[in-house]
Length: 97
Image (cartoon, rainbow, N blue to C red; front, top):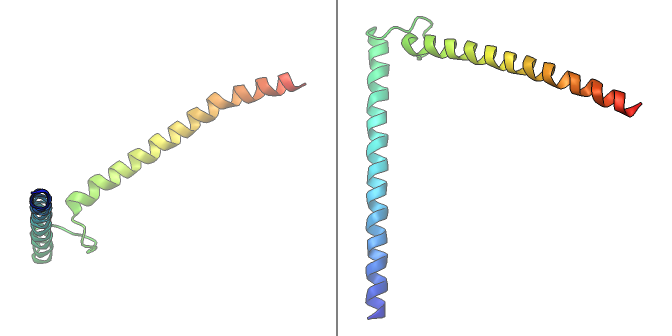
């Protein structure tokens, strides 16, 4: 009886594993189909790609805007951290004397 119970448990785990693999494979196949469709649409001219780098302009422009925004925020954050840490450095220098 114990062997049959272990076998049943093992089979159920294998079944769950196979279901997960099927789900992952289904998602991958769908992603591949979408990628191929986008590439075909770019090559036929239905989706614009001005610089011919296989990244559609509709995606490339927002990404560039986000990069610029992140750079501005990072610069502002770095500047504000420098301002807040500078007075602390001066007070510790005074304490050291």
